[in-house]
Length: 337
Image 1 (cartoon, rainbow, N blue to C red):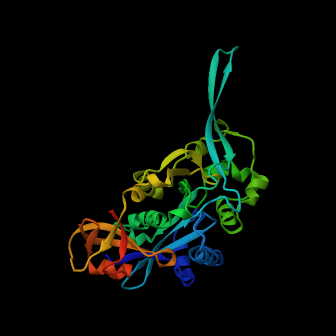
Image 2: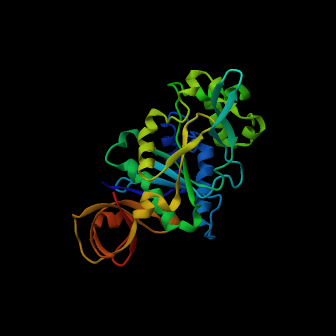
Image 3: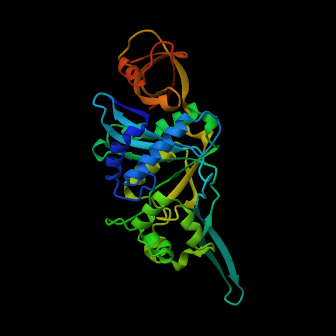
């Protein structure tokens, strides 16, 4: 396998735009709008260049690159702290219990409340793998590399990490949840609102969204049945997040109703189980397959490699070392695949 993860460059805008056009919509962090993507890459470059080691309004974009051909086959993103320069909105599902003495009945009604509870959390998102590459563990490479980046730069990230999963939508890109709720206040289709949010931010939500709780029972069945459900193509991503220790705690996306999952940063499996190894002198082609990472900030790279460990030292296969631009004496983060 000759693919590696590397920090994105501003010159990647063309490749990123090609990937964005393949998403089918609903990816707020990867809009098919070249100017917006160029701005994202500029912001990412600023994040990698920032010297202060503390959580901030940083975006870090990564590319999945075929090391031999230099073709870009996927992308992913990490946000230092959401909601620092603009509100980060979610709907919280809660239950309101009411009793009628006259009817001698108790009613348990679910409500949706607009909140900014998750502000200040770090976020992993923007993960997209080229449709022709959805085999061989590359999706796992994209996803887990982000956690090694967080561990390597732990001071830059919050104590909670969240991930928003795309919700259910039809083949035309319309979302039943949006049509039943947000669309009634904005006069926009879901694709229009999602694109607007990706380009202009969230202020229009604060201006126009209802701030009072919404009774779920008042929504049509088409909307109720998709609340908290990921898009069918996102179920594998949800399983990967759950395997890392993420859990759903009743927060959903305000646009499509997809689930927002969270995890304690230091309890994320890849962060908890990864260790530091020192590359030893010698060549070894076989060994245990591990996810490896090297470098800091814009020099960060990650790939799979064959590793033979001897305490804190390890022989690493030459191909992996070439992709990591590492050699004997260098220290790598390593975690079992």
